[in-house]
Image (cartoon, rainbow, N blue to C red):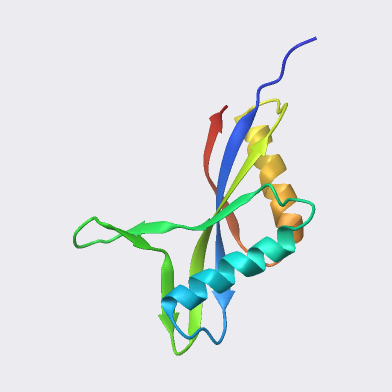
Length: 115
């Protein structure tokens, strides 16, 4: 029997928050809402706010854009996938499992690495 490897898959998603009072509020709401939608089936998925590089100074900034109380928050989802056939297979599994629970949230694979 062939031993199939395990992978860590990192996805990014765009989360819309309405009626946020501040950027920090928007980040907290986005992480909490995403967490609720993944619980209980995928409560092992790590969720965090992503970073975007400043085009002027190359410093990392939180991936949040807020206008008039509405925010677009870039979330990062990390999921361990066990016994996948390949990196592509692991990415497909993670995107499918997370995507089922986060319908209408665009997801993109940004990293897959063996663990």
